Length: 113
Length: 109
Image (cartoon, rainbow over all chains, first blue to last red):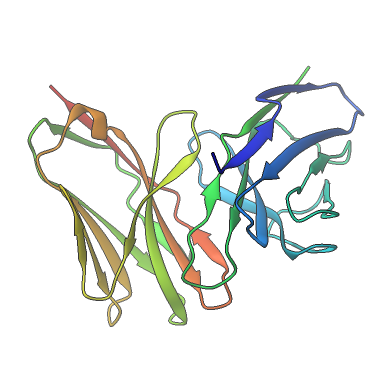
């Protein structure tokens, strides 16, 4: 079955700690995205990548970092500089092109201990 | 002003009702349009694309008005299982997606 896998489903972070959220896709999509969703709010773009070894900041990149070493993988690190990391994190992928929809993983919920 | 705006609702309707959601967008270069459904504490899932001529998928009808820069979603014969948040998504031809904040629908028995 093709799809997007995010792990872990739930994650707890201690003060001053960096944590990494995993996102893997086997859809052969070139583009991958990370979003943050706060309760009762819409999705906000953190980072996106359209090709291996290249990525761009989204609207709220501060306190986050990403890498794209493989087409299938786009991990997100929430650094200690992100002072309010508690949120629902969603990874998505798509074929490149303006008329292509994004497909989402089932998300990671991050909380502060 | 947000690039994509939706009425947040909530819309509370009885089973069997017809309900319509609107979404307006500000970027006239927008090329493609989608409706997603998001259940509570779940990921968004693609409901349908929106085509210029309008399109239908069972009880769901999507319309696009480029001149007025809005899209709509009509749900006929609402079911309890239609209760969810509906997200409007607008893409530019560069592939940038902008999500609305969503409209919440609750269908009651």
